[in-house]
Image 1 (cartoon, helix red, strand yellow):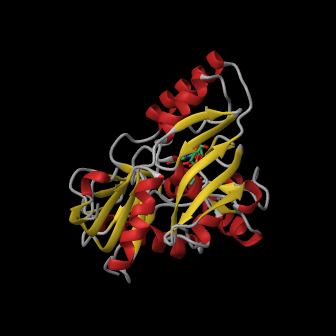
Image 2 (tube, helix red, strand yellow; image 1 turned 135 degrees about the horizontal axis):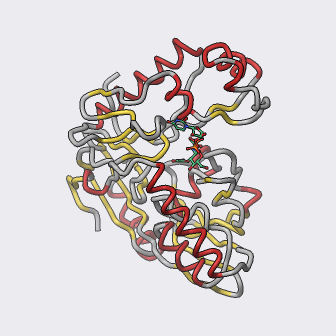
Length: 315
Ligand code: EPU
């Protein structure tokens, strides 16, 4: 099952990255349990879980451990509850669920990535979040034990969950159960298609990882800092506790088009770093650091990345 020296680059949306020392693709709970039995031969080994690699930059040096790809893929309606595999692509699940007339994914169903990855980072767009209708999450540890976490125990927050905060590399989201409300199939399908068209129009189509940074939570001091640099008008309609778009901030700071090697801040949406064709993972990392430094120096705010990094990068 476990493959050595596996090239990860083609797995990624950004089309950068090196090789995994060990790699395994798990397609079912059975595969996962087999892996748990094989693991003692490899321990101690660093582990990294990947889904569709749509929100991940893998180092050019690769990963000197075991990369586990979650491809556990199923979408089933059982007694009004949807059971979805953690490795199922969110757009694939969303199409099937919408086609049966269930609401809750029509605004986020075009976000690239797996359902497990979406739950890990609590994907949200247009005030709809993957966690809204979760009933429970099946989390499996590398000792082969599995636990069901009810929604209220998953610590969902803005772009975060218990799985991201507390036990990142210790197990896998094998399945997610949702209780979606019933809606109007035709209406939901229109919404899903309109969102797809909007994403195509507003977001860059070059390889990227979506929004690179988390938006800024407006504390009293952040609000003042942004107001001082961008002008009061830019924040006059924002309250303490609101989020401020990093895309808007980087755009107003004139950073669109900034490049390091082949990595560039998208001219279309400034919170997207794109691969203009020749980017390395290190180019992306260097551009990420450059943006963080510019915002720290000019606005006094520490940006936090939404995109995840895997492996080692040169500082
Ligand atoms: N804007 C600019 N310049 C830019 C980018 C944005 O002026 O370069 C302006 C837009 O015109 C708009 C405002 O900033 O008035 C907000 O932009 P947008 O609607 O694109 O939302 P966002 O805050 O940048 C967030 C999420 C997106 C999600 C959208 C829609 C984060 C980090 N990003 O973006 O999520 O799709 O809202 O709900 O929270 C992602 O997570 O990968 C992602 C793209």
